[in-house]
Amino acid sequence: DAGVTQSPTHLIKTRGQQVTLRCSPKSGHDTVSWYQQALGQGPQFIFQYYEEEERQRGNFPDRFSGHQFPNYSSELNVNALLLGDSALYLCASSPKGRGPQHFGDGTRLSIL
Amino acid sequence: QQQVKQSPQSLIVQKGGISIINCAYENTAFDYFPWYQQFPGKGPALLIAIRPDVSEKKEGRFTISFNKSAKQFSLHIMDSQPGDSATYFCAASNSGAGSYQLTFGKGTKLSVIP
Image (cartoon, rainbow over all chains, first blue to last red; front, side, top):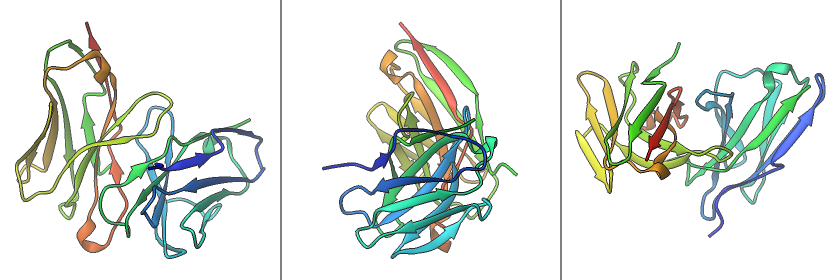
């Protein structure tokens, strides 16, 4: 039973560039949430996707956008990258947004 | 505004001892309180969770104690082992209002020494 998988594992970008991160949810899960975890901090909620719609959004600018596909996988897009966007980006899945959220191992994004 | 405050920031416990991590929340609408364990280079893994209708929940060596009136909850790790050395996060959400986001504390780095 595959858990939450994220790609790529690591990514290095420069300021101003755009990046796309990918997530496949745990088998049987249809809801995907994205979190940003800065070094030494707890994860912060970015947004959640269910039925291919953004259902809820945290306090992140419009530079952060997402998408969910019919197979429940999801993408996180970040435009106009800033140095402060350097973080571990975590994807979590759950069934219909309820119940325990299961996390992937994240994508480590470094901005130079 | 930090809605979930976690302490201590770091904790050193001898093998076999009890590790205690505390969290306090502000939003009285929170109704789901999970604890996550995170190892370096890995994502958070759900350990144990509690809802406000019970004051304590135990799973193996891990126990959550919940005090609704004080708006506090804590994680107790009994018989702590070196393999428990990790960062622990408390979190909270308000599932009743259809809010699905988890609000996390800042984490506690636990080191269990032999």
